[in-house]
Structures are given as structure tokens and as C-alpha cells.
Length: 524
Image (tube, rainbow, N blue to C red; front, side, top):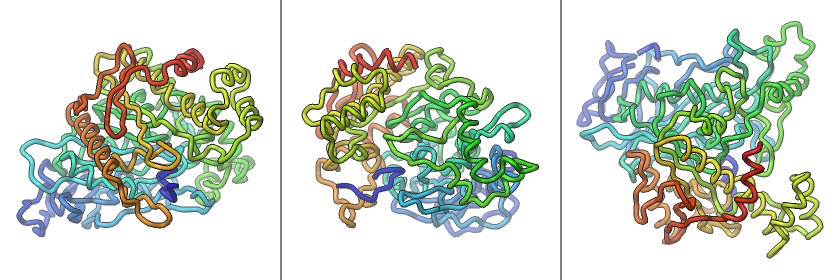
């Protein structure tokens, strides 16, 4: 059984020093007159960015640059505001060590992180390239309340090496600090909450302005993420402020629906404000900005997991986000681009109750599905066991079938290709659980612990990882994942690439079940 992967829950106004030092003279000093100017060039030990001169370190066949600030620290008067540009550092920035997590609670209810966390990490191949490399920007999951780009499961070195791409991972504000939609915090334009979404947009803006200095192509950027990170990628497809900042999207186990209204966000905010004692303060905003950071994160905190509803996340404020992302997609109002989306075969198996009687199964279904319960029970009888039925029911209704609907709507709304995957490799005793594909994408199996020891992948797992890295990086490069077998384009029969050993293709995956869910999903 996998543990403690904690993957997030499993597993430019200034211009910085000369970019692209001579690769043969990595210790050469940077021209002080060029500070704050990002210039196109190959990666090297020192690279100029709009944040300052970043001093990286060799990491295998890449240069790694860690903890680069892409925005000003969101503290004091900048708490609960859109991110401000990072100040260009006058001294060289040590980018050899990972930075902090953004404030959050861990699985044991312990407080972690600091507010000065708006940083990103870059892995760039050290070899020179005749053409700029494609860029893959990772947005981590964790229910928008936990997780971080500093988690070593997201180390980008091997992915960058495998695909000759540049990998970027980013932190963004989480939970209350990232998404508190209290009306008192609204801007003159009416924007409220969505600070974490604005962080992601700011990071993508930093990539546009700086990635050429690392040898990357700012005109060929793929945003990809898992779980809440995948949901955030889909949100960015419908956010006006992200237009032109990325050119491909890959969504792993993420939704394009169920973004809260401002009223729903305010109801959550009221609980947080009350818990902090700010509802009676003479200056509500000042009270919120002065509150102890741990107290803020604990105020109104709820469990995070695939069977839990996310308490914090983007809201439909009419400015940052005006409509449900899927509504924008169905209306052709999203940022059209090549898009891939998929889910795992046993998403909820890790968090489902370890044992269930038939009576307990029926009680759970009635509690979770209300008026639909009897239809659901008829579609998902307690076979082969009540627990197995519950896992398939919740996996289908929350992940597999929504991805089919999203892929269909995207295909109908745009001319650019859409691709869908189904990850079914049983990498754990519980099957293809939520987040299990992540170490296959990043080739970070050594960051997965089993009984306290790093997981050693089987030959089959290694083959699948190599295949997935090929599909992911080719998609980032060209918008066509290609491969052998070729990943089919969405269309009649709902074709998918089945990520297993061996990799195969299929049509009509869980068709009858997804046909059952389609009208309910589309009606919401």
C-alpha cells in the first residue's frame, strides 16, 4: 500500500542580468549593467530574469533553478490582493535550494508554510539547442488547500531530460489566503477571491517574459496539472487574463465545472471572518490582513480529499472568471488550443471505506446522491463487493464520466484536436488510484515510499513511464502526442489511449455508465 506520498494528496515591468551566459564559462560574472533584463539564450549557471540574476545548479543533464520569486511577497497590505510584480533583486539570487510551501495544514492537522511563497522552479536541459525548447508548466493539486511545487514528487529533472523540454513548477496561494471571497475585499472592478488563480496567471506571465533566457519558447507553453491543479488548468482556459499565456493544456483528473458563485464564496468567507473575530471589527479588511497566518488557515478549514467537496477555490466574480469553465467551453468562449484530458480507473479507492456492508453502501449512496439514489443503486449494484461498487460509482461520477463529457464538449466547440486518456495500470494494491500517474509522468518513483523505503519500479512501470513521458512531451512540443500506438483524437466512439502495460487504444470506455451520468452532469 502506498504511503506517505502526500502528492497533494497521494502519493513585467522591470526588466534582470544577462540571460544565457556562455555555456563554456559558467562561472563568468554577470554584467551588472544588464541586471533586470531577461535575454534569450541557452540555460547556464547564471541567468538574468525580471526577478534578478538567478544562480542555479547542475542537476543531471539539466540546470535547475529553484525558488525564483515571480511575484512580491503577499504579506501585509498585499494579503488578499492580486499578486504584485516581484522586485528585481540587486544581489544575485541563490536558486540552488527549494523554497517554502505556501501556508496549509498537513494530513495530521499540522501547520506548514510561510506567506512569502510565490516562487517557481525551472529545469532546463544544459545542452545548447538550435531552437527554443517547449515549456511545460505544472500546477499542483491538493484541493486548492494543500500541496506545493516543492514536493519532490514534482521534481522536473527527468521529465526535462526525457523530452528535451523545459519544466516549470509553481506555488500559488491556497485555501483562505488564496480564495477568500469576502465582499469587503472586493476591488473597485468587483473582483473578489481568486488570488490563487491570479497567482497562476502571474506565474505564466513570468514564464512569457523570462523563459527565453533559459532557452525556452514563450510561444509554446503547455499548462498541465492534476486534481485541483487540473481543475485550475481548465479554469485558466476560461479566464480572460490568461489569454495568450499558454498554448496547450493537459488536465489530469480535474473538473471543468462546479466553480462557486460569489454568494457561495461569501458564505464560506463569513465562517472564516467569524472564526477570526473580524466580523465585529471596525475595519474588517485591516483585521483580516493583520490576523495570524496560522489562525487564518485554521479558520473554517475542512478535510481535503477526492470524496470531500473542496471548500476553497475559484469563484465566479465576473472579472477574473465570469462563467463556469465548461459553459465557456460549450459556448466556444474558452481559449481554444490542443487539449488532453483523462482520469484513472480507481480514483477513489484510496479514500473509500476499507470495508462496507451492503446496507452501509446503500446508506452512503442515499446520503451522497439524494433523489438519484435509487437509480444509482440500480446502475451500480453492490457487486462484486459493496466497496468495489462504491469505488466504481464515485470514480465514474466524479472523474471518468465527466472527462468524457468535457472531451466531447471541447471537440464540438473547437477545431484544435482534443485527446483523452484512461490510466488503468494497477500501480498499487488498490489499483489506479487518484494521483498515481504523477510519478509516471515525472519519473519520480524514488520519491514514493512503501513501508518507509523508496519504491523500485517494475520493468512494466518503467516502460509505461517512458511511454507517458513521450506522449506528454510530444504533446507539449507539437500539440500531437503521437506515439506507438498513436494517441487517437477525440471523435465518434470516444476513443482513448489506455495507459497500461502494454499501452493500447480503446473506444467506448465505461460507455453505459457514462451514458447514465451524461444528462445529470450536463444539467448541472
